[in-house]
Image (cartoon, rainbow, N blue to C red; front, top):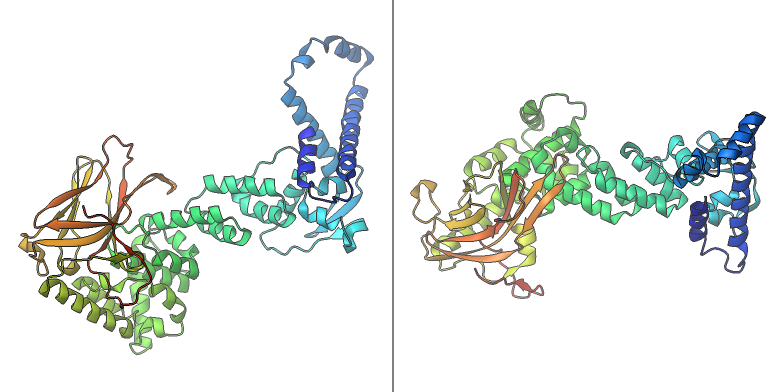
Length: 512
């Protein structure tokens, strides 16, 4: 049990500097207590053997089976004996802990491995000299089973934590200030992020200060919110978390911005109707019918301005409406749903119309100085999925400010091509000899649990293309790519007009 004693010394290294012998005395106390337990176990074992059996045991032990037993097994047996005698049976207890309707007969010297108890037993605290201590649980995530397991971990070498119990154990370990156990919970959470656990892990990481876990869960949600299409996942995403996700340019969008709006409509319906039970195919029609009924009852008032909808306004404000109203069918849906107030849409229509006129009737070829805030807050979000390693191409709907940009995947290369001669795309295809666009391309492969197993990011760049010119953007030859492969694009065709005073440095990537 030496490792346990060493761990206790490390945790208590910063205690009582004015008493240099305190740690040594506690270590000696632990060793004496453990020796007594082991001796008692051995005497109990020998008392159950006959004289001849004891003789045979002693005779064979120097070179017999007992000598061949691995040392690790002996350590485990010793640890198990100490756990059973001191923790489960409470032998030699000098303090009683009461919490959650239960009692534990424990030992100060073991409890002092916890920073919580170490502070309690040192100094001028009321509990310092008490033999019975009542603990009020400040955290609803802590239950009796978790407290029992965590207190028991002070008496044994290791502890197995099932993923389904990791949050309760983490909450208890955080309260008792057990850094090693918190680290163990952190490692388990890293390895078990999934659709079933990601939201609870994210909220727990915020509560207990695990910034790395929060970052991992946030990235998982950005990769999977639009790709998993899970109703169960949507119901667990809070308003604040959804606002953060929808605001991000890192959100992996499978088609276009309109799909984000559709996802938000489903999410809002599920939040307002938590008892809804139906098939995935029925979710959107049921949501549309429910909002249509409310629209009739409110005499056509936009839903987000009603009492029920007001709480969702900050989330819907993160939509990039400019890339929704540029497509006629999408604009019709927005108008028919009447979720979004007209006061949000009118300025966007005006801005988009003026931008289109500038693109078509001036000599502007596209962005020159692009600011990072433009790219992060205003870029077009779109994407697609490569199910297999085969040729594929995308052309997203909308006038896109005078561009007809085609994205092609062929022979493990991703190519951007400017098409200026294809009249089937309708109006808005500019015939200017050269056009520019700021872009970013991300490629992601996800395993069955939604964790990224391949990731490639071009970062933001400036691209200049002439008529019908094409340019290779990514080459995946000799790379271990796993299909299906998700492709996420950010485009900025025309930056927003900015004032003359500008403190932000523009992002000037070299032209390709």
